[in-house]
Length: 182
Ligand code: SF4
Image 1 (cartoon, rainbow, N blue to C red):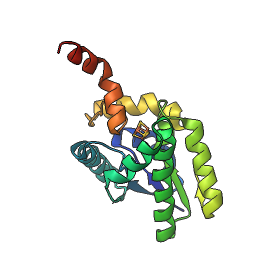
Image 2 (image 1 turned 135 degrees about the vertical axis):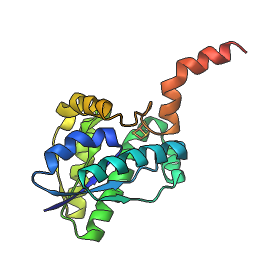
Image 3 (image 1 turned 135 degrees about the horizontal axis):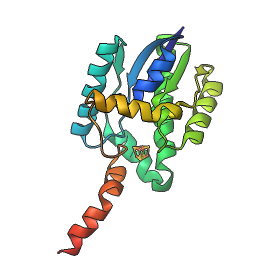
C-alpha cells in the first residue's frame, strides 16, 4: 500500500518514517509554502532530500509560492496555523489522488508544538470529503528520539516553525531589546 507523507522537515520525518515504512510504501511530499524566507525553505528542503536519499525514500517537491500562505495567514492571524495545516494537507490529498495513492499522512503529527488535535481533525475531515484514507498516529511519542537522532546525524535544525510571524515570535525579545536601544 502506498502512502503519501506530507513532510515539514528532515528532523520531523525520522520517527514517523520509522513507524510507517514497515507497512507502507512511503512517498515523501515536501509542500511548505509557509516557510520564510526562501533560503530557509531551501535549507530545510536540502536537509530532507539528503536524509531521504539515505533512507531510499522517494521525495516529491511541491510548488513553492510564499504568497499562497501569506494571503491566508493575513486573512486571520490568530487562526493562521489552522489555515496553514489545511493548506498543506489539502494539497497533499490533491497530490495523492492525482497519483492514485490510497493513504496520506503528515509529519506535523510528531510535533508537541503544533495543535495536534486540529491536525488530526483536519486530516479526518479531508479524508471524508475526498474519499481517501488518512493515516493517524500520535507520533509525538517519538519526538525526543527523533531529535536525538537528528542531532547525532547533524541534520539542519531550524530555529522557528516556518512563517515570518513564527520567526518574529521566536526573536521577539531580541527585537524588543534592540529597538529599546534606539
Ligand atoms: S506558526 Fe507554523 S504552523 Fe503556524 S502558520 Fe506559521 S508556519 Fe504555519
